[in-house]
Length: 292
Image 1: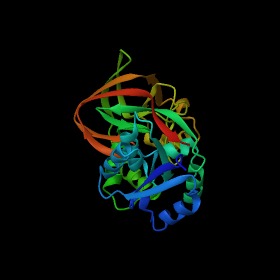
Image 2: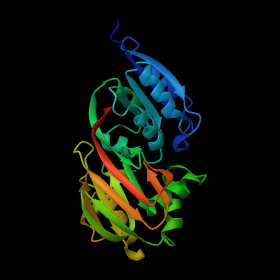
Image 3: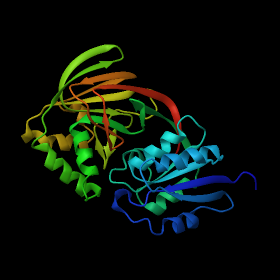
Image 4: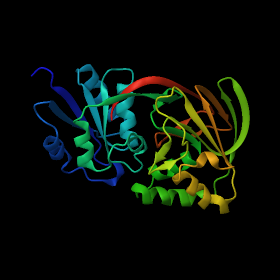
């Protein structure tokens, strides 16, 4: 049968602190060999999932499935962007923001079973100083948390909460100059998230109106807020009402430049990267096919 689909599964063995011991066995059990030719690869270091996925594009693979967290998904998707090769997701991370938004089950076997439908949609992505993101990029407090979380030994939501609590009491808001589609504003902000999808992960919605296929990014400016209101801020995040908070300002845009006072961490789909004072951000509409 010449129309069998070739699927490469790129497995991150350490994402989300979860063991992937029997994942290959479960994949082979769930995917019909009459329909799919299944191949496996294990990512061994940062950047490896990108290399494996880029090689798969050259080899004529039909779909590359990221078995991992948001960082693994980002590497695979960055290699597939602008091609006809589809991205599949088996979410195994700490946040799983894009997977949750797409309605992909967090249960491993259910996520694999869903892939067999082979239904896809085309989504936008963003770039920040040339680095692509598919869910969310951010500066300020959440980038500091991502940096701390990446260097901590506790993964998963508990580890993330620990990083948040240790940063929240000492973090100071910073000054930014933002130019969004030609309009310039100045803000002192606790953090700025640039959202392609509405949520970070773990069902925390920072940009409830954001859409992955509307051709714009949502710039979410979180203003300085009194520490005693932090529980209310969390309530808004998990209740999809962040846009109703007096401390949150959301501006849609296609081309965004942010000037900040120093070089500092930026998180790109949850992975911390050191970047310059000037951040050039833009949307790339309809640039990635995703199995959903």
